[in-house]
Length: 333
Image (cartoon, rainbow, N blue to C red; front, side, top):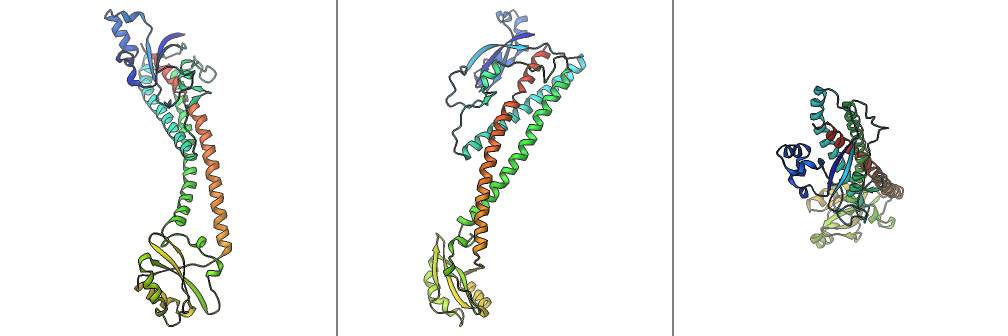
């Protein structure tokens, strides 16, 4: 077992240049007769994943030095050690990147649920406390196993977490997209929005010969509509037009006419700048759409909660990247 001094900091810019240099710099300074050669090597761990507002009372200050125990790992031959050195850099970047992705996803989900973001934890303790108490898990990663296999196992575990996150986020995003499309239809302009929640049964006249159409009239052309709609065809029912709704751009009017002249009326209305919306009133279809919306809202909240809990657990699991840091220390000359 080896003991290293660990400088734990919430911001890597606060670490002195010598500490950022790591073990090699310290050894070089020692060979030059620098008094620091009597100190144990320093490993700098950046805690950028710890969100700054209101750290818990038991968390460490912005910079603190603690002893870090490194097990007696087996680096293998020189050739394998050189090959491993390159793999470690890539693995460390990859694993830390996954950690950041999960953290950002947690923040997005908390914001969507109106939850105030707090300090992330690993195994129930703040990240800095976890790092200072880190113990190598010999059950998962035997110390006598080849380091190449250990690194591959850690990276494979994190890669599986990343793939799982992509699938879960895609499913959640799909539900959000469906809800977004429905909301746009219900809140958009009268020219494109769903009209079913604006129409009442008594607004529509349907018989063997008569039919009610819905006309979208530009807001500043309402007088023109009221003055001209009866003359757009000879078979329009007089004084049958009624305004049902108005938004910032358009007004929604009904008009009743004989079914046999519907096509001609649409052509003449379009020439005047009025849009006739195709609409068939159906209480059953309206109730079905309402139930679909309620189900999507429930699914979205369930998936958000489930994904958030998964992210909390996975954020903790991904911090096996500490093991990569330990391996880096163990293979340093």
